[in-house]
Amino acid sequence: MADVTEDQSKAAQPKAAQGAPPPEEPAARPTLHSVVIERLKRLNRPLQPINRICLVGKATGGGGAKAVASFFERNVRSLGDAIDTSSLLTGMLLQLPTGWLCLMEGALASLSVLLSALHKESKCEDASVGEMKVICIMDDVGDRTFSRWTHTTLDVSRNNYMELDKSGPAMLLSDVTIGALKVLKTLDSLSYDETSTALADWQNRFRTVMPSNERLQQILEIDEVPSLEDFVAIYETPSDATFISDRVWPPAKPLVY
Image (tube, rainbow, N blue to C red; front, side, top):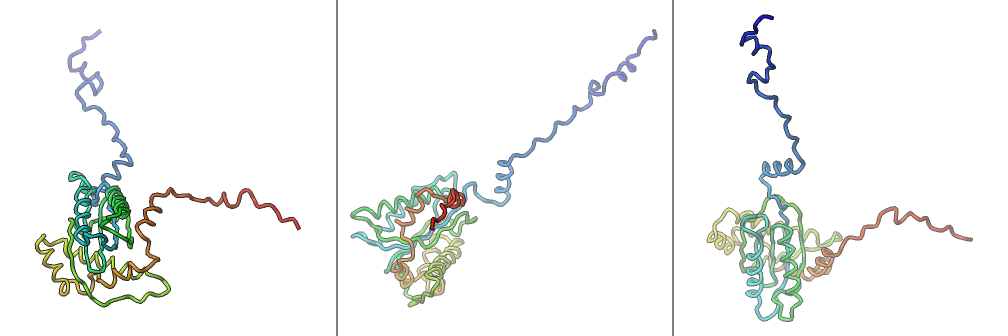
């Protein structure tokens, strides 16, 4: 048998043994979780959806407006985590002679804690917050309208009571909420001192959109607007869905003539 040279021996070996790169492993299939996370990052959206709620209420007790401001300052700033900014609450407390308006944005968990605290406070004998109405609630609003928390006391007399038609107070509630959102959107780009100056100059900056004394008083007098107590009761009560099969089966007994 002829001798096999070293070159012939290498040629007879499999290609993998000659230092060829190993075959590529199949790419890992993306999971639904990774796809959702990547999409949220691409859209610059937080992991927790941002919710929005707008309340109108009236101060009670001896503390008046100062007690209401103290309650919100104490509770709003204590909620959320600086690491997870979506859990922080942002918005504005606007106090007028006829009542106050509070528009807040944040994670559902933080808003739920604040609403529970408000409901509990309203039941106390020396409560600083009295009757409260829920005029707007929105889920997954995307971007925040206002990126911090502020409160102010103004006297916004515009003599703009709204005549209600058969559709009820929907137009009134939406007009007040949209007006507050427009104010906050404008204030978001301002510094703290500039925000205070702009709010004090509301007659020139926000004459047509600033929620007024008349509108807040009108909302508090409308029975159709749900109170915070009614809202919390509905919100915390488990849903009791009735399926069609529960209504059609078993069939009704035939009438005996």
